[in-house]
Each structure stands twice: as C-alpha cells, then as structure tokens.
Length: 353
Image (cartoon, rainbow, N blue to C red; front, side, top):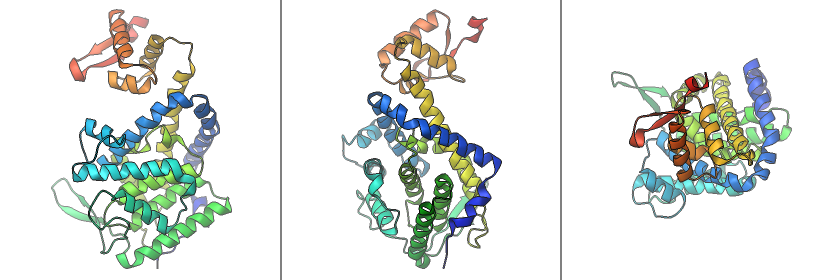
C-alpha cells in the first residue's frame, strides 16, 4: 500500500534556487492584502478576467474548447452549455467559484475531493463524476513518428481510495506541524495526486483546482487575480517535462520532487510579478489614462495588441485605448505593425535617441 511522509522529504528541496523562489514569494505575500484592499473595486475586473482565463486555459490543456464568445457567457453564467465541451467548461466554472467563495471551509479529505470532482461533471450524464477510477489507467505519449508508448503507470484502481486518504493525512499532518514551508508541501501533494491519477477522467483539471485551493488556504491569493492556469498553459511543455522528471521512480518512492516544485514556484512567482505590475499602474491615480497606456507600452517587452492593453490597463475603455494608440502612432512614439485583428504595437525606441 502506497504511503506518504512529508515530515523529512521537504528538507531535501531547500536548494539555493528553491530558497530564492520561496523568499521572493513570501515578500509578495506580505504585500498582497494591502494592495487588494486598497484597490478592491478596480481589482474586481482582474477577478472576472482571471476566472475566464483559468476556465479557458485549464480546459484547453486537456483539449476542451469552445468559442471565445461562448466561453465568456458560460463563465459569467449567462447561458447554458450546449455541447459536451461546454458542459465540462461549465463544471470547471462551478468548482472554481466554489473554491473562490468557500476555500476556508473545504477540508483536504478524500470525501471533499470526490465532491469537487462530482461537481466538475455535474452537467454530464456520465457516472464518472465523484467516483474514483474503476479500472487501471496509463499515461501515454506519442513520438514524432506517431508511435504511442507508456510514460507512466499510476496506482492500480484498487489501491486508489486508500492512497488518497493516506495522501491527505500526510499533507494535513505536515501542515499542522508547521515546520515545512507550505509551498513545498502543496507542490509535493500535487505531484503525488497526479501520480495516483485517481479518476478515470479530469485528473489534470482537478490538480489545478486543488493547487488553487491549497494556495488560498495558506494565504497565497494571487490566483484570484492572475490566472495560474493561463501561465501553465503558456508553458505547457515545461509543465509536462517537470511532471515527467518528478514522477520517475515514484512507485518505488525514489522520485525527486525538485523539478516540479521549481516549476510550480516559478509559476506562482510570475503570477505575483504580474499582479504587482498591474496594480502599480492602478496606484498612479493622478496619471491621466493616455499617459498610463503610454507607460504600459513603453515598459512592455516586444509587441503588444490592443486587446492585451485593455486587459492590462484596468478601468480604461477600449475607446480610450484606441484613441491613445492613434495619437501615439501619429506622434511617432509607437510603431504600428500589421492591420486589422492582427495589429500589434511596440515602443519606438529610435524616437528616444
């Protein structure tokens, strides 16, 4: 029977790189509530955007799509799902909302994990929701020639219920002891959850929802404003590489958590950096909106689209953004690249010389 013990393993993860990540995230954590309270009204836009991006990206990683217009309506609960993909998207929306509103009241126990999985499939007729896998599953990969091979064999179905109980118990005991950094324990919990692969379907999405839940419970709230799932989707190759590295030898209890821990800490750090970059602009209330847009483009690396500017410049209408872009192009401060929906802009550094 698979056992889990986090009381000592976390100590092996205290490499200089990981300690540096932890230090940075702790510094961000100390400032987050001050910023969130100061700009609660403005940050509501970020909350809505993060919900849409999280729902879209976490499902997209698993090959579940719908149109941008339909996605937004489903996430904002303004329409009913029509297709299987949309039903799964709606399920993710509901579980995400549950975590946002009730994270303090969701114990890390097998029964509650099952309830969250049940709600993930609440719009489906299938009986998979809220039940552990009933048959053994495998994780396959495909090489460049199209040949499939088994990358990892999770625990057999008969071991899964007890394994999840043991996993939750080990995590809760380590958290309650208060010796290990919770960020390390969260990352270790998630890799172990993925290696158990407890469900017939929905394991990846559940792992990302549980990541948010555990972070919220330990006062890391950045995922409420910046979509962690979006950042994971953008670095999907690195995500799978880290997962593969840290799952090798897992059955024999010889796996190295370090690769996946570094990846998750990197995602959290990037999210906090994005959060503070956005709120930094909001804090400059005395700066006129056109100047805020100008500064945003100037500080952006590479090209940026009008849509990206609207998302980053909280509280500024698309009309103001368009008018400012036109003025900046005429003034020669920015360069317009392309036309129509593919139009991008970048700062004209030659103008500075």
